[in-house]
Amino acid sequence: MTETLSLLNDAEKDGITEIILTPHFMKNGEFRIKAPELIEKFNILKNTYQGSIKLNLGNELYIHPDLPELLERNEVLSLSETDYILVEFPFVNYEEEYDEILYELSLKYKIIIAHPERYKYVQKNIQYCLKWLDEGYYLQSNQSSLFQKHTDKILRQLINYDFVSFIASDAHNPSRPLKLQNAFRKLTKEFGEKKAYKLIYENPKTILNNGEIISEFKKIKEKKTRFMFWK
Image (cartoon, rainbow, N blue to C red; front, side, top):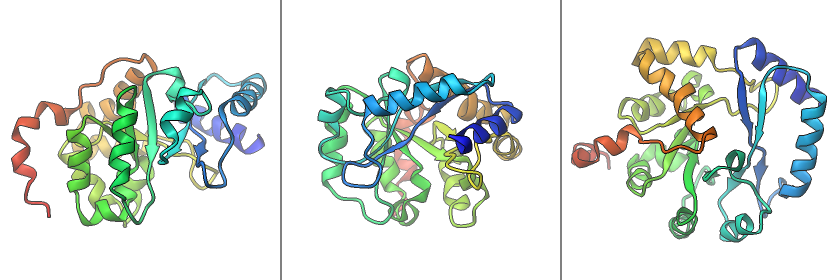
């Protein structure tokens, strides 16, 4: 609790006014707190926190065949009770069965794929992103990836080709703080203020309103063949 409050205080100083807290859920891992307990902890946090940031709750859902059923039973959470869900994959290997799970999830939810730039298979083959985008899924990248040598190049490619719809803090602890202003400045310098604003402010706000996000990729989908040089 103390660490979370510290992160929120730093975020407030950074100018953040509203966030979605997305604790991990891994059915077969160490993060297995289900929604009822998570909501209880969240309510305690809201009653304790005295700052000005509006707090919302969701999950970062590790891919698993049971996710559709867990969502149906309200045992895990969408993003702030909207139609959007945040899904992450293993970092090293991508299995074919994930496509089937994603498809089933997409029948009821709008899928956001977390930090694609960090996956080894995406770093080797950007076609994974094209496949996800072609299915209508969205990509969310970490602000910290803009400043790390092993991810900055691939993330710049993804942003340059309008594959990414959101830039998030992915805050975990003081070493991964809840800050976005440095990322906004860097994005503005390299890609322009309009794109930076859309990635960090406009599109995330649309999620909170449960609105429809028309990704830049969808607008150029008919020109998809220009990306086919990635092998």
